[in-house]
Amino acid sequence: MWASTSRRSPLSGSRWSRPLSTDTAAADRRRGCRIGISGRSPRADRGVPIALVPVKAVIIGAGMGGASAAIALKQLGLEVEVYEQVTENKPVGAAISVWSNGVRCLNHLGLEEETAALGGIVDSMSYVDAFTGETMCRFSMQPLIDEVGQRPYPIARAELQLMLMNAFGHDDINFGKKMVAVHDGPAQATVEFADGTSASGDIVIGADGAKSLTRDYVLGSPVERRYAGYVNFNGLVPVDERIGPATEWTTYVGDSRRVSVMPVAGNRFYFFFDVPMPEGVPFERGTAREVLAEEFAAWAPGVHTLIGALEPGATNRVEIYDTDPFHTWVRGRVAVLGDAAHNTTPDIGQGGCSAMEDAVALQFAFRDNPDDPHAALAAYEASRTERAADLVLRARKRCDVTHGKEPEKTAAWYEELRHEDGTNVIRGIVGNIVGGPLTA
Image 1 (spheres, one colour):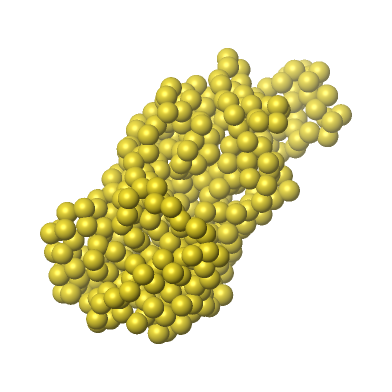
Image 2 (image 1 turned 60 degrees about the vertical axis):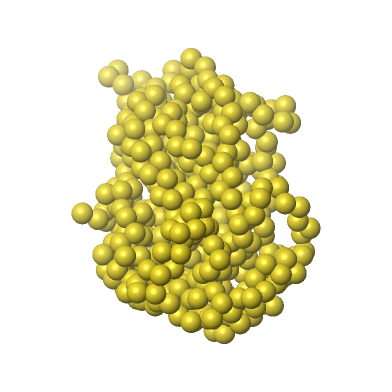
């Protein structure tokens, strides 16, 4: 059964605190600190106030996973500090497909209206022959929406990121703080920063991305990322129906490549080009139009219209990697979340959604274990590793078919698309959506 999408969190009234001495509580009051989850100190048997202070969470990274986790834990009344190494909001990538499981997470965090306002409306999907421009198949998205009970939304990444930061409190995020070390202790975990400062908390959540230092600490050694075999060029352009219909996710496929557009808010298309090539090929920023015009010279007119419309200086070029799944996400009071835990290729659009699921699962774990950070982190790990690993491997499998790792399988897929009525594609998407904390 699908979970409720009510914007009101059912978490109020939980105990998210640990007792302090009366002297410490008095000092906290003098400093103006918040006492307990309700702002009031309960009375002891003899009428002496005993203060409660929230469990403190230090979150490293203010990307989608880190910001979502910060909001989720703040909803419970935890004291949350967020540290981000960049000095301004400059996400990698132009947009993200927020599938229904991710949207449900954002709704749960109280962002239903904001998410819908930023999301593009995708009423249909189509696949188009790369060279002839012939539509191979076209089908409605309504059966998917009916089955899972939530419309998905493509959203511009910078706007999604800003929405999450504002929901937590943009001014409360500590920017320009690059983590250089993390370690656990008997009472707290501590993070050290490049500027010589440090931060400690009852827990540390490392949402520090695909090259995570927290992951290295949790696992005890660095993890080698796997190059997926292709480069993704992406950006935003005005909607142009010579490329594809304004409310459709249009994908041109051929020659083990794909070119895709989907709508986001503001009458824009999010676009991407997937180009198989060796790792480490040099690229000069600002030359995307020339590179893509050469790579896709024989492709259909709609693709060339897109190439002509893109802004070369604003087009991102990203080499695509993932990591093999692993099931140790916690070491003492330190845990990983998001790409740090499950670096995923974008081939099924679930990397960001999985990070949002992590945030909700982390919230549920602390809701159910309010007095025991170790038990809460263990519950978080137990609830997430298999689900996240499954999505990593699903994306890897889709990646290999799309990009011609076994050419005969790619050719068979193209032939299947010519006879597709949407049933098989939607079944696969639903399989990706189902299984998270709000889509069980």
